[in-house]
Length: 328
Image 1: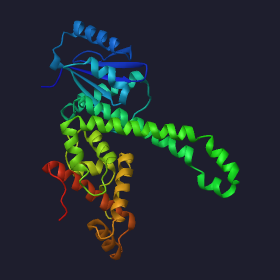
Image 2 (image 1 turned 120 degrees about the vertical axis):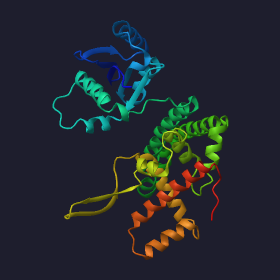
Image 3 (image 1 turned 90 degrees about the horizontal axis):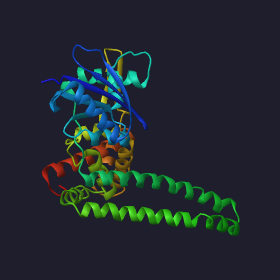
Image 4 (image 1 turned 180 degrees about the vertical axis):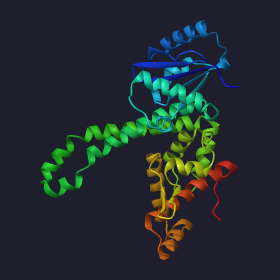
């Protein structure tokens, strides 16, 4: 049964704009602080005014990462949908004007119109949330490291030896501290995985696939929520921007199949490194596949993309069968 009340929430760092959509009443707009206390007070006020039961109200908001935390924590036992901002934007058609208040109204109308298709928020386990935060920090530190080391070859070519050594000495402490922090992060993440039977089992299964390491395994577990949110290889290939899609229309447009740019580029990059690792293993099944397709005249990147796709299918086949990868 469809709920009586739909609440659209436009979330920013400091505030939330709410639009309350009820039958036979004008849309009501509210603005509150983005704090747990403010959300609870607002919910209490709404209960007193509308006297609804838990199953009679639905909250819908754009998924804004950590900005949504206070909303989610405050709405226990109430259905909340965290929808992709792009999904909402493209569903609206042609629009004019934009404001936080108007966006909240549009989100509420989206929730009502697409209620049967909404996927309600189910929080990941605490260990997954901790891994997610640590992985985000690890990525930031990894991005910083090249800023310190880039230019080593140029300096060795154009600077005198004594000048280059003096220059390198100035940032060695920072580089050493950065490497120590990355090592500490790695150990902390491995400790979380080792302390959870389910995570430990998943990592063992995923890393049994050739050229798939613990970093990629952890990323896959985080982004699939332990394979609960994405449980098929085709869906994950699409999510990563690896699955090719047709590009044709009528009789005039007959383009070649191509991957979508709406994808998680970070996991795609990690899978690309894994695929290149497979191609360096001479005599391996995927390396032989690559060489065979090259002889057939296939596009080089199309072959590498096919290798990435094969790795995804192997990972999901092993996880779904709960078994270690065994070469044929």
